[in-house]
Image (cartoon, rainbow, N blue to C red; front, top):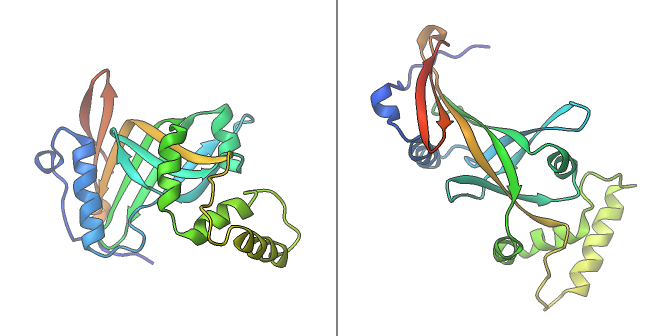
Length: 206
């Protein structure tokens, strides 16, 4: 089960000196290529016992040069982030034969920003946020659907409030690696590491 990666190259010239600018270019190209869920990213966290955990979340914006996503603060990931704010993200775009790895530190965004985003979510997603005690044990699918229907009736015709336990996180990157698949597994890997207020760029062996 191997593919030959022949689509593109990543040179120092095309990488430039600003990894966030390069991310924006690659992200736009992933959307143009109709990659499935181009904003899907793996989020890795580590709990207080040193146990890593990873799941897919959706990027909702590159705001103030930080990667923003939303979730239930009481979830498994939320509990991990409470004790260890260091995280890693990975984007993988198979059509473009590319991935981006990001390491950084997470912080909660303001409640005002979270509410602004919550208000533009689909109504079903708003009800879903009220319905789910994310990562907690639930007795059955039927219990979830019953609670969803009950809340839908309760809030019919009314503005749905954002739960206190729900909101956004922002990942401030300190390391960003761009990976471009190449022939013979001699992939291009260019990494940027933050050095105070600037970025240092190096090439890695595949």
